[in-house]
Amino acid sequence: MLSSFVRTAFRKRACLLGQNAVRAMSSSGGPFTSLVVSRPTEAITHVELNRPEKRNAMNRAFWSEMVDCFNQIADDPECRVVVVSGAGKIFTAGIDLMDMASDVLQPEGDDTARQSWNMRKIITKYQETFSVIERCPKPVLVAVHGACVGGGVDLITACDIRLCTQDAWFQIKEVDIGLAADVGTLQRLPKVIGSRSLVNELALTARKLYADEAKSCGLVSRVFMDKEAMMAAALEMAGEIACRSPVATQGTKINLIYSRDHSVAEGLDYMATWNMSMLQTQDVMKSAQAAMEKKSLKTVPFSKL
Image (cartoon, rainbow, N blue to C red; front, side):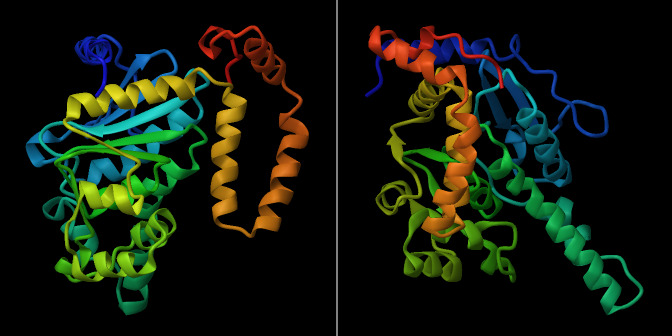
């Protein structure tokens, strides 16, 4: 159980979200309409799916705004870690079929070849919505409560650390609407949970995966009683990451993803090339000095990255 201190801190942060809102803008020049971006602390960015009246269904704006949002975060030297969550009663109901039907069902083109060409462009555009999370060098934690359906699974498998509430459930819904999941789940989930048989079962039957099983199979690392406890823990964990050297944490994320997709030998070679330059940082000495002096890393003034 989390301490009452941590819970109280989360309540205070939640009350201050409006005051700490980041001036995040979409590529169209206006503010985000499907997301709320805030800064609970100087080094932590909170991205909240914000269509609670539509169960955070992923509409046309969402697919482009996520790309704009995470590209901004990637270039923000103040941000060291990201927390993603959903507003309202659930995390997300997945794709907003009513809003997206014209893109998916009526691709432009004078013949089959041209329609197929344009459909491929649409699919790769949607894939970028979640690949941009994985490509962002800042570690990304995702906190799931209630339902996480369809595109929600694509989203969370692109994140680095996954937490959920006891009432959370996950569903690869695409086969129920006549298609194969095409924006990340089938590619990332096998590398997240490790059991090809379980991945196949979930993807082919669209059955719900509940919190306890999600933890036992490795989809999430921790389960909490309610959203309040989960968000407090997510912010606490984000704070632990943020207080460490950004050279170390961002380098760790980049190399973990590279090693996932390459052989051990290739991963070691990439790591050696990476650290031949990244070890030449003052952060190593600062961290070592803090350890020798038994000081918390939260007191170490690491430079922005």
